[in-house]
Image (cartoon, rainbow, N blue to C red; front, top):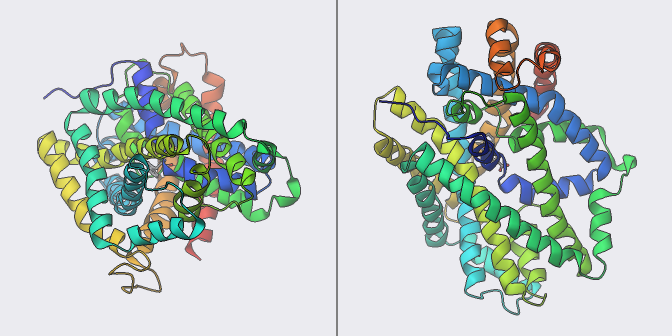
Length: 446
Ligand code: TRP
């Protein structure tokens, strides 16, 4: 059977960007920027992206495109049998992320529907909070919406790399961009929008704590979908002449731009209504419906906002699920449709436990070491497997891969013009990236 590939560099860019852009851009990044000194934090974040994010991303691209295999076989081919373990860790991590990510994606889908049917008309702070609590505590609601989100992901993946992932991201990324711009224009033309801009961008080095640096390292990792083999898997479908360096740079910068645009849609509105900025569920599911519904055409705007958030979550999930699908197709020789089905059923089984373990729902009392099921999945993946994967990937490419092969793969599509940058990337991969990730890892453990 012939292995599929993306059809152009544009398709490569949009699919990879689709993986990077996700819930992280909307419910975490903008707030973190605001609370850690605005422009000052942005500066630190960009440095982390440059010396940790981009080198790891390029490493994953190298492993994937060089071998054109799923992470397990890719590591085996380049490093021998014992390196397969890194591929297996990636599969495990991507599944663990999916278990809780799909639960939150379900909430977002539900809110898209609720805003479409006008559920937030004339909502108050109390009723907005009630709507959220009623949703997350209802076993039927959370499961149903999580299933819906997973069904959408499964259908797209069943259509294949070109017919599914490529087609969906080519359509959805521009839609997401337009929707975010519309929300931005509305937010920035409000009175007092200046306060929100100030919150995001004012450069304040006094708010930059030592912990900000570690936060930004962790954030750059999750944001850019690194450490679990999603980028290895996608790169195994890249075109031959794609310039890996410029793709990684473009994806990292565009992803950051989308986070900033999301922040510009959210915070001017929050401040215009004199609300407190916060992040996570509180902001997305309580504050935003409340303030948007107070604007003229607020319902339409709210619907657009949740639609764009659903799109972001969906294209990120495509890449997470594809890791296991590629493995089942190539190692277990199961056809694509069945592979997608098996992976999805597996995610539904464990993912529903995560959804039901949220505060107030039926499994919220089931705890291990003081953590709910949802939190355990999050902790194991974000704090342990992700950084560990990142260290192993950068050490592998820095020390174990043949450097002629790395040079050759990275100089495709740029006619050897990037030799000096490639040398720089390899230097950073050997001596800086693994050490910095080790620091996040050790800190995350405690
Ligand atoms: N980057 C996505 C986000 O910001 C989530 C994501 C997709 C991810 N694939 C990943 C995170 C792989 C870690 C690893 O929401």
